[in-house]
Length: 346
Image 1 (cartoon, rainbow, N blue to C red):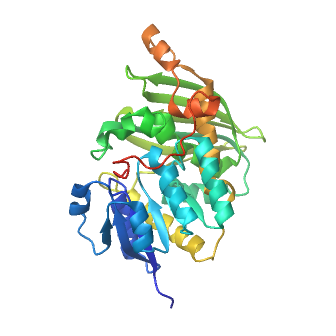
Image 2: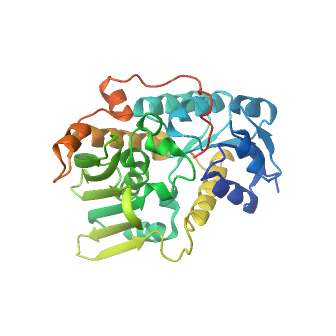
Image 3: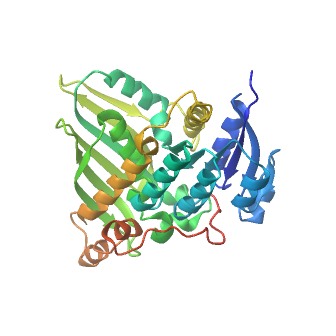
């Protein structure tokens, strides 16, 4: 048996423990190096991997076989590009980048370097979702509904960047939207955004959204996102042309907060190992990362205030997010180096 692949993890926040635990469990991987710009995050890490405060130093000294990037969204471009240009395969937390323009830079960099680039949409690896997708194979779908509802403050893990549109790319549409939209694409293939309603808070952060989509075959999809939901509800419902309806609850059977993530991230790293080892090839658009960003930007462009919003809320909704700005040209796509502190993890 060949030696395990040496894995580097950039960013030691709320998501990193799932990657590290999966790397320790799977025979294909060996945690080799971790990186975070915050000394306290490195001090909290108790594993055997070497510790670094700069991702470039990690790449040069640890020389990992592959890299997981789990930093705030605005830092994805610089960290991923450095790794790809160094010839290191990358698995990056969704979204692929802050904007679709940045996503195109990364997919082109991966193509030019001939290095695997994978976007980690962990919900497509959920056991209930996989069972639903398997049951849908070969059947014509009429409609899909994805609900991704949570109170975001309960999921921050001490990271406030989620609530900063400049670093997140927006709000619930920019951060949770890619996961939900990827599930629609998993079931329907390529889709187009037909409508979007958004409710933002007083700071301009989108807290709730309903996105309508349609496939070329005429199937419809609805994505419901909520960052103010009292509790947590995440499911997918599919209706076939024969009238049968089936629902997959992504949280069912997983006791404890975020318990469903353990098996999802193990499946992600199993897939990533196959890419790195040459046993599989990356799909078009970096495993769906770029199409998901394009759907996010289309949703923001089509967004109108949700019914019942106040005049002030409607005025806020008319504002431009970082993602919208890049799409319309009002904000330049970011291709700068990583600012101090951006490797504070997800």
